[in-house]
Image (tube, rainbow, N blue to C red; front, top):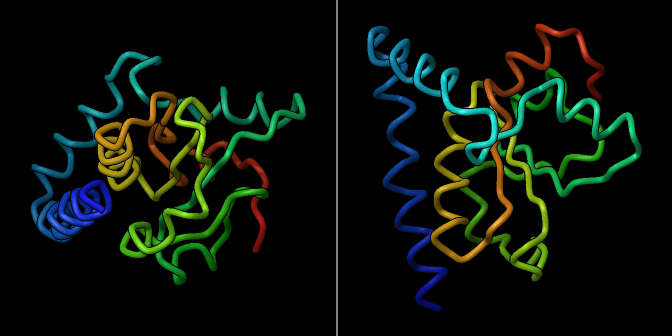
Length: 146
């Protein structure tokens, strides 16, 4: 129960951040630059690496945490669609194996980094965010489901 309360608290606190960041272009640019310059193995996976995994037939547990109006424009085939605000209510849908690979997907990598942090706090050891998110996936013109 404590873990569920903790993830709700972290996600609620962080859910307000994107709105504040979006209203401050300098902060938004700094966040994007920070995310873009993280080491490639730092709790994230690059778009080309994820595409290669999928092309090789691997099936990581992917969760697209964007809102419905965002996923309506396209999402990666095989991803579970679960807006970030609903993740705490849907924890039973996640692997019980704390070593399972889980990849969170959002628009830019910001929301997925918050969710990666929350799941790390809950003891998951192989969680990653899609670096630069769907913005980069679409820039690479990789396929999406609509």
